[in-house]
Image 1 (cartoon, rainbow, N blue to C red):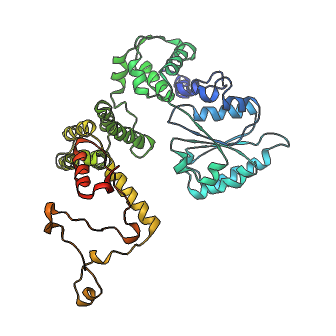
Image 2: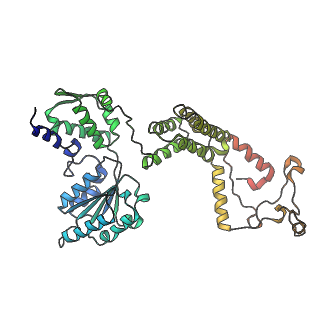
Image 3: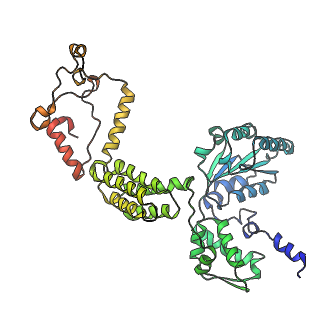
Length: 435
């Protein structure tokens, strides 16, 4: 039976990501736009004076590490709160401690709030006075867009720094540092034979990269460890895609999908469609966006696009996954390769703008129905010309309110389909529709 101290030592070993956490800017990997030589955040830290700021970026890119480096560099008290488990009471307690821990003519204590986007409005409000008066230097970390999740008064008192997913070279540097410098991994004979899978599964997340590396190493019994794509995939056996259906990536990817359709790139559109499918996106959400795109971006250039998109929506509702991916792909390619026009979209936008600007203009009398004798006596319907009584089912008459007579709202875009509509308008109305 092994000594109990053996098991205690095993249990007490910190995770690899924690063991390798940088303590200085020179050890920090990535985010060169913020902490590289001459970059704004490095200059601020090295000057010994800092202001409150919010770090916005995906998981595992070094937000917490940066906050710790700032505190170490400035040698000030460091308080941390989790937005998940802390309320207004805890915020006020920390602020009270900070008031009594500062020294004259020194930097304010740092209050680090992880996942600050989870703080309610009242919790964020409780920070305002302390930040404004310099009682604490607030460093917030968030994976969500602060424009939507952080109240405006607090956001206006903080600088905002955007962190990016780590690039391939950053991740490779981190891998090599781990296998050559970590006290535990140096005990093993580790060779990085293939790195494609581990980089792909990490998704630019340093913590996830190191967790995967540690998992593969721990899964190997003998002393020699070979990091290969097969070894990584065998250990993980899971979907490598990070996709938060309620978070920033959800909106970023659907935006890329729609813009690819609008830009007539079926390859890119299918790629983003696949990202959503693999990430577990709701197929009805995708189908609804296709219907909107068919109206907004293809429009009158190809009216059949709306019919096909709506048919795809119905098909997905009827057959579900996984076969539902096929009508979605069919509609995606059709919309992406179709001629484009947003004249109807622009037309309703122009009409709404005109209505808001001019208010409730009266309907011309000749366009009003006259179901009663009084209405007829008042001139309702008087002078109305029934279009079908005239050659070509058209007759010139005024349809806009008197004060808006001659206003142009719809402007044709000359795709082959829409050109026919435009030529008919020229034939009917003459110079009024000349562009």
